[in-house]
Length: 249
Image 1 (cartoon, helix red, strand yellow):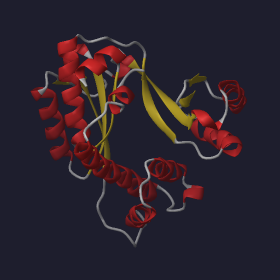
Image 2 (cartoon, rainbow, N blue to C red):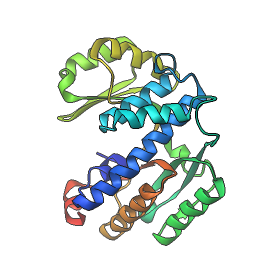
Image 3 (cartoon, rainbow, N blue to C red):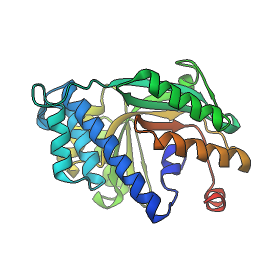
């Protein structure tokens, strides 16, 4: 497994887990609010909001917190805070290409935080499009492995118009084109129920394997970025072996 999903699987101590969970809920709530503001506050008619709510449910976010986030994004009933979607690109330790996606109400603050994180942990923040050419923009739909066997999911995904499917012991990952994400998601939802996640993301064209020292610095950089309230996603083109992860863990 490559990229940020690998970093997400690293175990932390219980206290750190609780802090991370609180920050995760804040990020999920922000995405729900932005999705509600961007379209109708009804998930039945707002695909982005429906995906945001489902992602929150997968993380066991309390229902009242979800409802509160929707209300905050409802015109006339929520707050007046406006969040901008911004993307930062750069190189981390070991020449790893990183894309940082954020939702912020203060571009200057967020840019300063991201730049500082890169600088302090052996990275270099670049200009827009400085590394995104190393990635494909894709739609990604995820289901737990228990929803069906790999052949059944593959057949359903192909019929729905997906581009590729990757299955393992934990999950099914269905890759779609950017424009076909909604159509494929709806078709699979009708067959398997709501997915764990459905979003646009980045897929590296190639991966790099940083050295142990570079990997250690990279994980510190990812941890700092993940700790930012504004940063929603970090995607990288790195590949770390399970043995190296265990050693650094």
